[in-house]
Amino acid sequence: MSLERLTYFVDAVDLASFTAAAQKNFVSQTAISKQMKNLEDEIGTPLFIRQKNRVTVTSAGRQFYNHAKQLVNNYEQAVQLAYAIGSTDKQTLSIGFTTYYETQLMSPLLHKFMAEHPEIDITISQDNFRDNNQALLSQTIDILFSRNYALNSISDFEQIDTTTLEEGNMMVAVAEDDDISQYDVVPNDTLANRDVIFVSSDAGMTEPHGLTDNARQDGYEFNSITRIQSLELLLMLIRLNKLIAFFPENSLFSTNGVVFKPLENTSHRYEIMLATNNQNPNPAVKIFTDFVRDNR
Figure 1 (cartoon, rainbow, N blue to C red):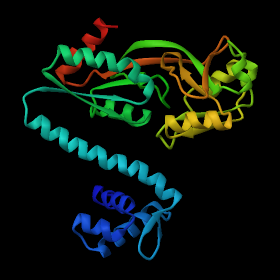
Figure 2 (spheres, rainbow, N blue to C red):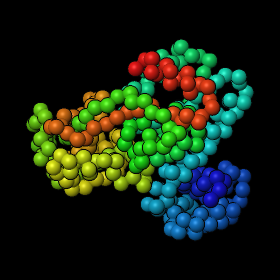
Figure 3 (cartoon, helix red, strand yellow):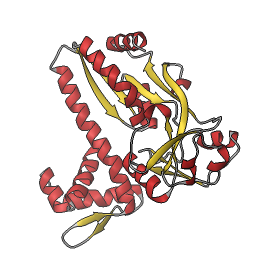
């Protein structure tokens, strides 16, 4: 599967037209149609619903589009970054993160670091846990802010060094008219057989790492666990459908119709860490990690 084919696919979806995608890429409409047919054959499922003057995506096509778009954007960002590095003598540092939760620690640290080290250019990217871990291992990012919450902990790899920046308990988010909201501290048995949702862009992630095991340690089981692609949708579903979700206690915020409650003697905990690859030769990595350790 080539980047060119992915680019054609993304353009065809964005423009809802093979003809418009062909014009944008200066190729024939026949070439686009053939590439899209080859892509569907390669994946093994239809991605488009073909109509007379437009095309729309199937459910599989929409899911594939979300990831293909990210790959194309990442390539374009990589080209821009490489050009920027090649045209300047400044040091560079690439920093990755996964969720809103890490930004609570990142933002003040980065603000202060950039003020103290204007000689270092920083780029920031967001990706899912699995891809961020791989990017750190392959050194396509230099620094990773991550919750210890992935399918495989990044600290399991011998070349990865980690520093714990914060740890604490998770809290449960519920609708303000949910029965759970009456408690100041939520008893474990009230969470039994509830439907849980969580945010992740990783289509292969079926639940947050440790969620089921932690619930069992506290003496209950969930009815279902469902992945949601955005924080905004998650909060809306909590409010409308009385679903529940878990948030680190450092990341609470005001949102209409949703309340956050502490849990009784909970096994649901989190850790936010700074991870680096000790095989990375970039001298800016040590400058940054020393700074973070001095400012924790």
